[in-house]
Image (cartoon, rainbow, N blue to C red; front, side, top):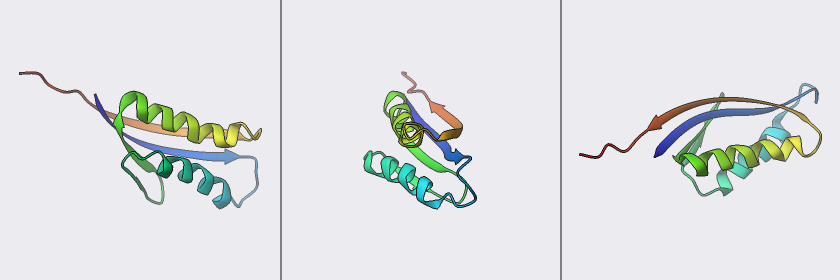
Length: 84
């Protein structure tokens, strides 16, 4: 099942400068090998549901495992394969 998600993953309580943290998150997404595109508000990731959600989890854990409170905003477009 093809899935397109738009996700924003950001640290909370780390001060005003978040670029280094967001950079770490985006690196995990880009290294996943799934098609992705980052813009000013979200990063879009496309692929199988389980693969996409695994990338979201790993990208979130980059911050959470450092003890950083992490906010995740996610929007998903599920595109089921239609069998005729």
